[in-house]
Length: 195
Image 1 (cartoon, rainbow, N blue to C red):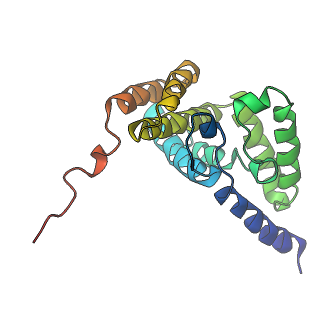
Image 2 (image 1 turned 30 degrees about the horizontal axis):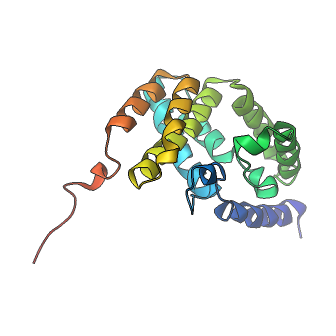
Image 3 (image 1 turned 90 degrees about the vertical axis):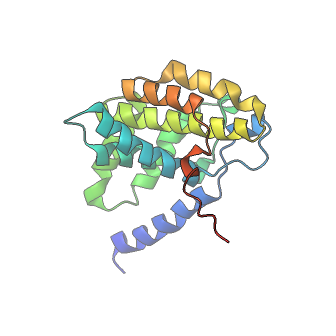
């Protein structure tokens, strides 16, 4: 069997782990069953696409979306470690090593693009990297708002922490809107009530 094909199959199984890895920071706020990394990454990728479109011409929305989607791949091997835990170990170094090992299984034609994209995300090294990071943060704020509305008041400082880190004007404006918007408002008026 071709090595690229065998490695692709292994990658696909490995990525499935992201559906089982829980976002651990929410446990500190007493959220019993937080979303998975896969759930977070999916919405972050969609947010990145929208942010890129809002930020203007010349920004590759697909690249920004892909960077937001792929930035947590290392968590298949490391799990998600909240910021309190990261305080005691060199998690950034471990992330880089795990990501590098994972990229070795990518087809040769994609490896350099993955390395470059990961570096851009980590260092805000491109417009798309900045947008992807803002999307990652903004997704956390949106999730915090949803948790707050369901009674997890310990999540309230997430929004303020995110506000301090956002760089794009679109993300800052959206965060303002998120704070003022009921998370259930999206379906109001869409329900079909009949007898």
